[in-house]
Length: 105
Image (cartoon, one colour):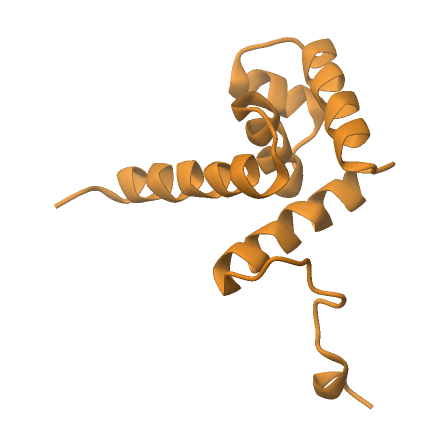
C-alpha cells in the first residue's frame, strides 16, 4: 500500500497535468502555477523547484502573458477554474464559481 506522501505526489502530478492540458502550459509553468495557487511566494517556489526567484518571475511573466492575466490572484483563479472544467469535462470555463441560483440572498 502507498504512503500518504506517494498519494500526495500523485495528486500533485495529476493537478499539474490538468494545468498543462487545460491551459496549454509547459510542465515547468504548470509547476509554478500550481505553487502560486497553493499560496507560495516566489522565493518559496524557487526553493521547492530548485531554481532562482528570478527564474520563477520569468515563468510567471510568461504564464500571465499566455493566459492574458495581470495578477497572481487571477492566475490562481484560472488554475482553479481549469480544475473545475476538467472535473466536469466541459469545454468552457464556468462563468461563476458559485452558480447564481445557489448564491446566498
